[in-house]
Each structure stands twice: as structure tokens, then as C-alpha cells.
Length: 378
Image (cartoon, rainbow, N blue to C red; front, side, top):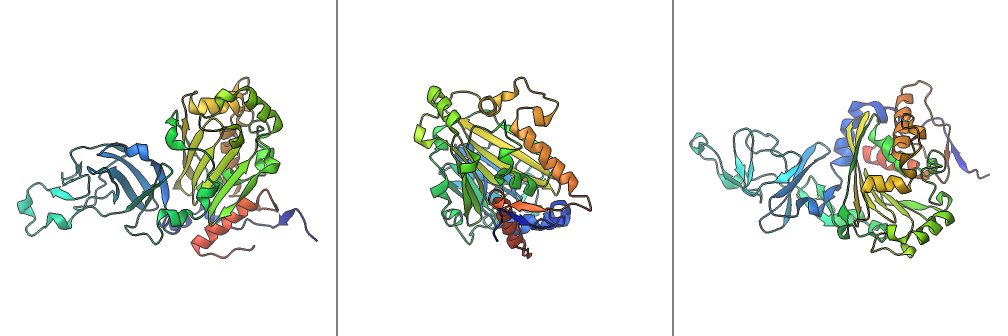
């Protein structure tokens, strides 16, 4: 006899997957390092010498635009003593200089000079260029891979996902205010919350009530999760009266929420009035950084505009209580951190899982288990 839920005493993944630093270290090696990771957008490195840095698993990587305007990716380690070369983002027209001993590289990755070369007899500069990584772009987004010749190029790795991306064209938009958080929760809890359809109708009953959650269309393409849901009739009427809020390149036929999660931890969010990059960055087994970058077409501020439509911007709400704040991110943070705390209880377990609305969580956990080489109960 069929039921509308799945019984179980424990999650598919063991609790140590959310608490253990040893497990976390293995994830960096087995999940993040073999993946194409989105680290930003093409405009982050628009001109020759512009660069941005990222951590991909155990590897520090930077992307720089060369004199020939090509994007190149390199490992962020000097070929002398291994010092990290660059931090954050910036521009270097004259080259990349190691802060320790001033070994200098061109923005194309070649070692061009070293101080006191007589101290290194026989050293050939042309043999000490930076270690190459890979960079490719899709739809204006920058992706990197630690290997210079990955087993799959970016398009192969994305598979059929581009067909589900939606009508948004980020390259036509202007970046507005970002939003940055650090939560006391494992990165997988953050991702699971992001793709969990069940909580939308409950935790976010008043902050994300503009969309018809029961009509959501979701699934996995490979390990990538795709999600779309239509506006409610009431919100659709609001959009008809306030069409100026809609992005200029979208029409009424494009309305709806596109809320995808590229494996393993890159969220892509397209709404009627904004497009967002939701980067989940693991810091430790129990702490995660979330960087939300927002794009619009000049109609208003990113995060404040988002909240003014989704949840009323917190007006008249209790800012001291995350569940009464009118801010869906505060709501999410609260429950993610509460779940992380509860995992230390000897009685922690999952008694049941919604067959439809939590199948995304089970699917994600299976993908994690497969990547980690551990077996789970279906």
C-alpha cells in the first residue's frame, strides 16, 4: 500500500557527516575538488589584469584576464616557497608579485623575474610558471576546476541543466547590493534547506507566500537540482498592476520562481524582478559562509527590494525574533542552526520524510553519499 511519506529512524547520511571535521576534509577532496565550481561572473574580471580568488576544496585558485583578454585560471601558490600570491579581488596591470620574495609572474602565468638570480644557478624561468587550473564560462558565470585538463568540460558537466535555467539573462543586468552571512551550520544543512519544498509552506508561510508551492516542478539532472513554481493568483494580479517591477527582458509568461542548486553548492535564483547567485561556502564542519549577490535592471536595491516584495521588508515585524522578522533568510538561519545543534543529541533522528516535498533532500543526500563512496538505505 502506497503512503505519502517515507519512514526512517535516521537520515540517509550519518550524523558524523554534519559534525566531523574528518568527514568535512574528505568532502573537500571528494566533492568540491572534482567539481566545476561557480566563483563569480565574467564582469568580475572584465579588463586585462583583473583577478578574483576562490577556494575550491583544498585548492586556492585565482582567475585573471590576460593581455590577450583570455581568462586563465592558476593555483594561488608561488613556485618558489608556495606562498599564497593573491587575496580577494583586484587588478594588477604589471604582473603578479609574490609578497614573500618578490618572484614576479606575468598575468599570463609565466615567471618573468626573480630577485638575485645568481642565487639560483641553473634555474630556468620558463620551467617555473604558475600551475594551471581550468576556467570556463556559461551564461555570464565563471566556473573553475583545479585540474588543467578536467575529465569533463563545463558543458558536459552541466549536462541538461541549461534547458531548465529559465529566461533570465544576468549579463543584461546590473549588480546591486549583496548580502553576506555566516551560519553555525554544516554546508549540507544549508543546501538541504534551500532545496526542501516542504518547509516553504510552513516556515515561510507568510514570507514566501507569493508562489504556489503545491505546483512546484522539481527534479535532478545528474546531480544538479532544478526548481520552478508559478505565482499564486493573487501575486499574479499584483504583477499585472505593478509590471514596472518586472525585469525589462522578461514578460508575464516568464513569471515564477526559478530556484536551482548546481552541484554541489551553488544556488541560482531567478524571480520577476531580480536574479541572484547564492554561493554556499563551507568553512568548517559546523560553519558556513553564504554570499548572495543580486542583479537587477536599475529598478531598486537588490536585497532591500527583494524583501520589500517577499515578506514586506520586515516592516512592523519583530527584529529580535527571527521567526517574526519578516525576513525569510533569518527564518532559514534560525532553523538551520537549530537543526545543527540538535544533531548532537543521542536521540536525533528522522522519523519520516515527505515522499514528494522532501525527495529533493533525499536525492541530495544520495548524491553526497555516492561522491563520498558510502552506502545508504534507499
